[in-house]
Image (cartoon, rainbow, N blue to C red):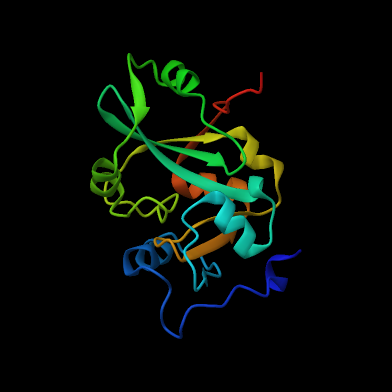
Length: 172
């Protein structure tokens, strides 16, 4: 299903993009993207994929980890899990773990379930899993659990300031 054929999606109200901070980030990056708003939350990758009508792997999860206490953003496709040990090795960190909700909001300015890949409160190191490049278009949160936007993966990664890495958990 193409991005324009999704019957569940509705464009945001006139003059409204989702979150004002995210709208400002789009302006600063000179990005013109279609932000879609859904009546029900799309907090999880599965909820977002169902609402959009796309493959789960086309959803970009923006996940905050703490590496030796320093926040790092990992961009991962919705059908995969992050290999925390691979992230630790990539960063040369002693210890890496998922950030709690408070650290996520403090670092990004957004709540879990609505964290976009860019436009955060603080500049954070970004690791982007190479698997995102398997798609022509991926979908990411637009600052709220009700909003998403599509973008070509390499463009999304570039605007996020991401480094391409292989940090996807491998199947046993």
